Image 1 (tube, rainbow, N blue to C red):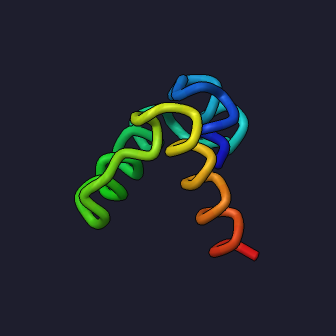
Image 2 (cartoon, rainbow, N blue to C red; image 1 turned 90 degrees about the vertical axis):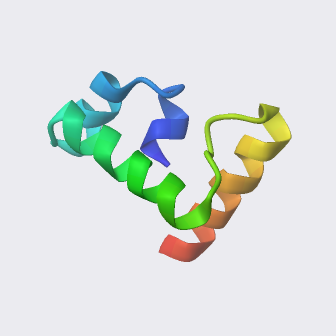
Length: 59
């Protein structure tokens, strides 16, 4: 969710999560591999769906 909040910027996301930017990139790549989809592409509705899904899963 932090990646979505920072508009896909790995450096800002990494700073918020206290991890290395490469860790953020790796986790996003694994998410794409596991789901076959990229939460940062596809427009506002697609991104909002991913935000809601990830937030619900983490709750």
